[in-house]
Length: 558
Image (cartoon, rainbow, N blue to C red; front, side, top):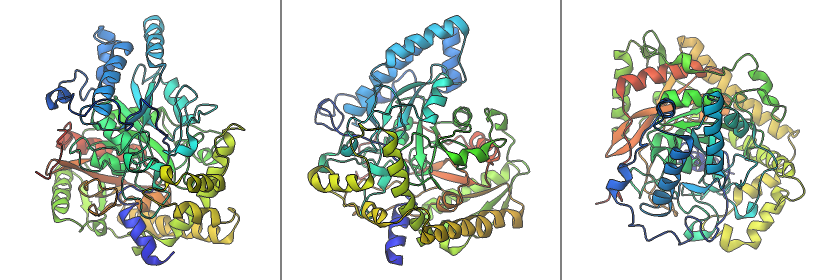
């Protein structure tokens, strides 16, 4: 691939949220996007905003349960009704692919447990939606947005799903996403699209609830749209480069992409183990922090989690200090700005707010030029690891897996062109298949260069030189018009690549609105610095109070 190919794909893709981690599925007769479920005018704008649980937090749900105002069943019923109203009718967000067929039975059991012995954990009775790349051993499928995995039900819970259940969460459903997390084609121009051509897949084109003609970002499109639209208390997304923080920025959410190894990827459909991570997407920093602590731990299925022993916390809420910016030193990634003067102006206001809260703002802080956009090292790592990691995941499904290798996936796509290749090709699949094993020197050299640039010469050097607590930058540009042909362009900016390549944490928090569309600010830092990032993000959130629920505008082009 030429340097122009790399930069075009990663500037328009990774920074805007096209390099991500996976999950999805294919249409049933009653599925959103199948043509059923109403004409789209059944739910008024007033109905969308007149919702008893709008913007409710984990703490507020628990307070309501203790007071007898809510039960897990009652809030689950309300969310199921709202999903039906907004996902398949009304604005037709197509944010949720399927709901858990046993949700109400699980809610009843959680209510009985709450009455008998109190909460199981910090998420007791909290309905959450998971990106459809996260395995759940229940009645829900996990397919990476591809019809090739139609009907695939995991033989066991992913480590993440098991942790959430252990904390008492109710896994309400699977969220829409970009097919194979965008790791399919250079021309993959629309977020939240899964196989089946122009009419979408099981989920259709996922929409941004702030303006329905705008992208929600990818690949955790449904997780972002659903959390913003109050279809659950919060959601789980996944990221390889930009796909938790990008959709969170475009949906006015807090999103945390943790250090690689803090969360196990066991049971998560992969792109690349060097960069993949799951993480919370929530409406408040506190909710995201509560969720983060329930997903940690060492897992034999994921060797990289061994390094997290002694570095993770099971409770990150101690970091929630409203004075957390006082005395903090943050470095400005100025070279990741300059794409849109309106976004730059909003960023300056955010930096001023941080200064007003007592932070020292070091401006600018530079990173290697190769990290500014896409680079050959990251791409080479992803090519090799996608082949190895996807083949390993498919093998974990056992002998009944619908497909058993990347080679079979490529063959399936070719044989089902109308379903899988009507809009986009599969060049990334093909190029990944052409790569050798992870012992190849080409791969080893690319991984070493990736870590050298992003760690030794990048984040670690900058933070040592300026004695920083965090780096700060623009998460993403203004949400662009949703366009399957990618004719509208848009976006720009985004600083997800350095922490992605470094395997370091990255976090986004709402920064403000431009024309009614949200834009986020990113905080990244050293490995295992999640508590520090949460402390700074919480203080910024409390000082600025940016988050507003969506307006569900049909379009801004009026």
